[in-house]
Image (cartoon, rainbow, N blue to C red; front, side, top):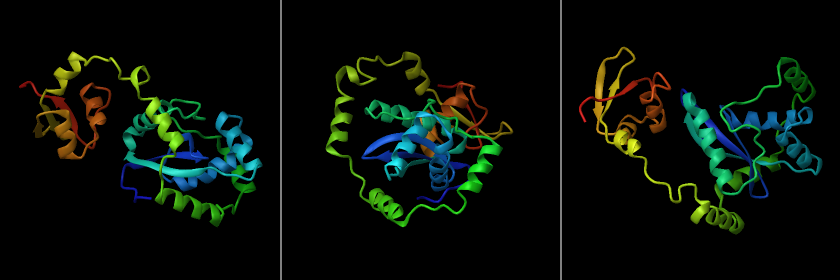
Length: 226
């Protein structure tokens, strides 16, 4: 797992029999993975029932880190991966579209912690996960799903016309400012600004649309000179 930098978090998934079943976000996925296994006994969600069924049959899912993303827009990326894997045909156990997270409350969390104190993932499970992550390859069934779900009418972008307003905004110059409104850069497009400043493109777009105040510690505005 990559070293987590400041203001970053991970998007991960839980897999069993080469089927992705859950997408989540955590600063510490291994710890979160253990919490999933501990707390499923007390929950009644689709995910909890799936995990309880696996544990009852002496199985546990596998954990895979999908991406390391900026913390301030992890919700966007969690939604993105949920939508992506659903488009591939995977049946996810997520009860929400993403970007939320869950907590059972202080009383239940303490009860679970005391009951399961000292639990660690078996070494066989750790080794299996390590080998899986090193040699991850899509099965032929998964490849076929991905192919079929992106052909013709199954492709969400099939027949979609380019948005004229989007094209116009894409060509606008972008101004980069400090949080004190001092101009420190000008870029020919959102894409160029994203690459040159190492800032997530969607985050810049959110600021330009006034849905957020800043991205990567900067303010962003469209230039009046196109």
